[in-house]
Image 1 (tube, rainbow, N blue to C red):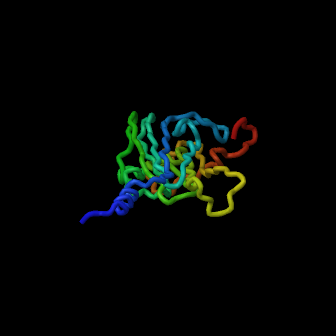
Image 2 (image 1 turned 180 degrees about the horizontal axis):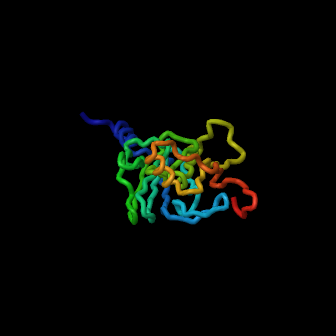
Image 3 (image 1 turned 120 degrees about the vertical axis):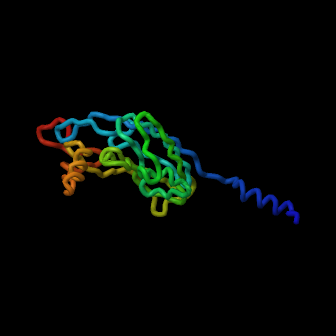
Length: 205
């Protein structure tokens, strides 16, 4: 059975759509230790690109996101893209020993996923042990180009990441809890975009 030229053109257009609005977003994450001062005390923390919180990912609905993660600390690392629908890309979801092997020290891994049918603000964070306490950041998914927001467009947008801060090493806190069977010690402070707020007699909160 032969197809007419109209049927053939329709078939080809379905295979290769001409109005593709999605883009490929490239990001590079390097996991490093950085000395950081909060609550008048300094300690090394695990960061992405030396930032706390880590960098914000910006993309549009249906964009393909590529994040190359290089691990330069002594511990294994993975990253979970919290709330992202991993459609046929489960190996990019991030839970260590479940959907992927951890990224070993000195090694890299390329996360590759598409933000299919999603818009809004989500969160990425480490998904192994308690590294997520300092290794986290936001994912901002904008509407497609030419597509309005599903609400009145805001005059201004600001990313706000809420977190917690322990004066002691967060890994030591969770390890102590696992050994005793008790709940982990509560954090010493909450953070807004990595800051604990002003502390009396301290040059930096």
